[in-house]
Image 1: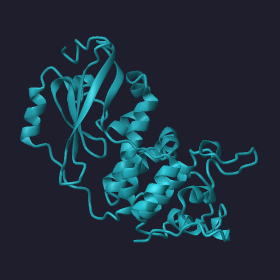
Image 2: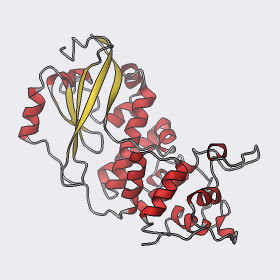
Image 3: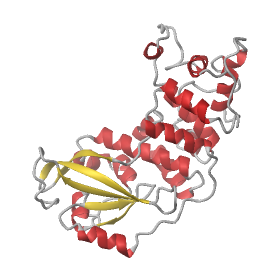
Image 4: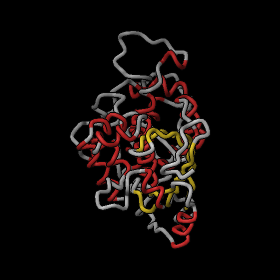
Length: 314
């Protein structure tokens, strides 16, 4: 396992910003505004994706946050490469090779050190593991089983729907369809959650008062999916479309955000019930051991929020 070397104090030039053929604006996640996959920081190539993720995350950490001197004349957003390497206790040369995709299989100790220096949360740390695992092969085939459909229908008083790793809504119960826009009707909205958020902003911003939070959530989930399934052509096509058509998508992707579906609270505006505050839980149905598979989203009225007597039926 390639674990990197400790700081050797030689101050070799390989650690200087921009040295080593990167040739881009440091700190950006590869967003070039062209709308192609080349502008999305390593889609389909986990080594490039690792470098893009590290660049994006160090761009969000200021020197002052980690006890280093700042200054107005810094040309780099966030930490310099040599600063992050020093904080993580690895050589600057090795860190540069990580960002450039020339170093493979960093040890868990190196990843832990980088995660600590960057202040990564648990989901982001797991994403590092995913990017360095060297995954290959297509995404798993997922299907909504008859039993899962019966489970959805049995939750008659709770809105519920199912998404895959591309944020496609693939199944729902009656209240779930009503809650998120009449998915089963002839005038239904876009069934891909990310497309709906970014390519139908007038509608989605009206539905979601906290649109930015929902958008960050969708992008973070897609980033996780690209690390797990780098050869998924449908996912790559979706990301290329969103990058080409949405400046908001490009802006949020550049932050390196990582989000795992868990639980929480959301607000949405329903045409009949008005503004709703709903608690939600996510239930994971793996396609195979260790795979994402499908995610069941179940909603219920928040005790302090407005009673979801319309779509939530409570």
